[in-house]
Length: 197
Image 1: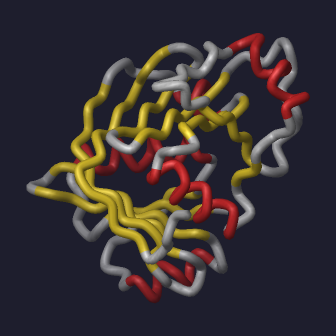
Image 2: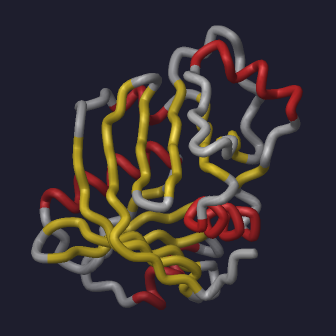
């Protein structure tokens, strides 16, 4: 489980981004108000915490904390919004994540989520099930993009109405609803306590 919140006194744009991300990730969204980090972690009751920070009144960072309050990954970004997507599309449907195995950011997020038992790599036999409603992941320089699904999710059904996809690259995060790009975060900096091998 993930709890998503913002820094104190978030702007309207930051609140909107928080709500979009919470729907996409099936996270619980909480208005922070005057709560300290320790109070937020206590409210999370052992959940992974994601805090959306601001820069000059705009959303500008994502910081992921484990249930003990240890900062795992912090991403600085500039945001680009695309299409408006109905909430039903972001609330329901399969969740699939991609990234080249050579990507440092993909491997950091993978390590972080594996520790939280959030992401698993499906066996090759499941890849055929994904082909009904996704484009084939692009390979760059001969590097294959690896698909991921959230642990505990049912296997994809051929008639699934919606698919939520996140393409993780070192320079950006692309959020898709079906084949529509509705949000892009350009990564400007990464900090992590984790080492990637």
